[in-house]
Length: 434
Image 1 (cartoon, rainbow, N blue to C red):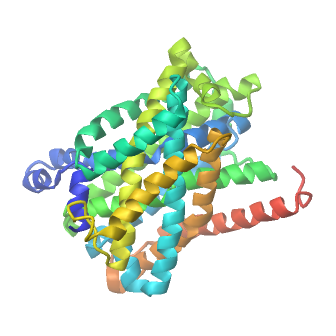
Image 2: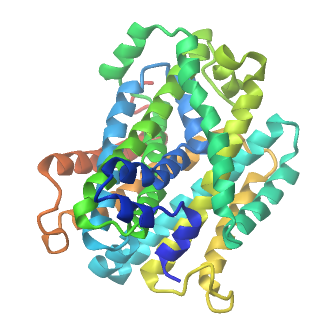
Image 3: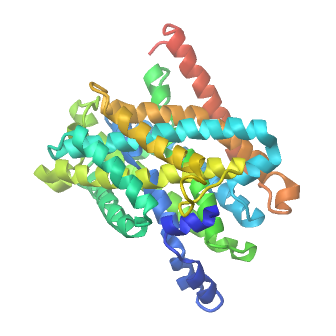
C-alpha cells in the first residue's frame, strides 16, 4: 500500500468533498481541508514543545519572545516549502530526496530523520509518564500500556476515532492563552521582549534557543505535511487553499507557543521560580484560570498531546524511510511481506517506551535535550529542501523567491552557528562569560 493510502487511515478523509465543493463553494472547500493542518499543528505542540516553552518562560521570562517570532516566521517558510514541493511535483519529500540526491545522501538524511524522530518519540512517552504520574498512576504501568494502545490504534486502523479524543484532550492546553491574560503580565515587558532582541552569551541560553527552534520546526512536521498534501490529491491550481491551510496551522502553533512562554513567565519567573524540574511546577502557570485544578488540567492536555504525537510520529517516520528506499510498506501488508516496515515502526515505539522507564531519568529535562538534538540535526533537512525548492527542472516557475531563500538559508546558518557556539561553550566554559 502506498503512503497516501495509509495516511487515509491516519488523517481525516477530505479529498472527495473538496473536489466536489471547490468549483462552487470555495469557502466550504477550504474549511473541508483544515483537518490535516490542525492535526499537524497540534501534534507539533507536543509534550516536548510544552515542556520546552515552559522552561524558557520560567528561566528567561519574556526575553526569548523576539526569537520565537522569528522562528515562527521561519516555520511558515519551511512548511510552505514542504507543501509547495508536494503540490507541484506530486511526490513526497522522501521520494524527492532519493530521486534527486542518490542513495548515499538519502541514507544520511533518513538516518538523521530516524535519530531525530526516535528522540521525539521518546519524549512523547516521557510526556505520558509525566502526565500519568500527575494522577498518581505509576509510569511502569502507564507507559507499557500506552505503547500497546498506540501500536493497536495505528495497526488496527482505529486512529480516526481516537484522534478526536486526543485532539479534544490536547485542546485543553489552549487555556494557556487565557491564563496568560489572567496572570496580568507586564504587557510593556511582553512587548519589549517580543520586538527587542535580547541575547545572553551563556551556554543555557544557546541550548534553549536551539531547543526552541528544534521543537517549533520539527522535521517530522514537514514529512507529515508533504504526505497529507499528496493524500488530498491537490492540483496545482488549488495550491492557494493549501497555502492558507498551512499558514493557519503555523499561526495556531505559534500562538500556543507564545502564550505558554508568557503564562509561565508571568506566573513562575516573576515569583523567582526559574527552574522547572517537574510537571507540578509547570502546571502552576495554569493556576490563574484553573486554581487548584491546574495540575489536573495540565495533565489532561499533556496526555492528549503526547498520545496524538505518539500515534502520528512513528508511522510517518516509518513511511518516509521505507518510501525513500523502496521497501515494502503499508498497514495492510502481511508482516512477513513488510518486515522492515513493521520492524521500524515497532522499534520506535519500544525504544520510546523503554527509555521513558529508565529509573532516575530527569523526565522534564528530557524534553529540552530531545529538541536540542532536533535543532542540531534540522539543517540537514533544511539544506535538502532548499535545494529541491530551487530546482527549476522540478518546480518550473514555482521555485523559491529571494525572500524565502533568505529566510530559509538564514535559519539554517543560524542553527549551524548556534550549534558551534554550544559546542565551544561546552568544551571551553570560560570562553565567554555567562
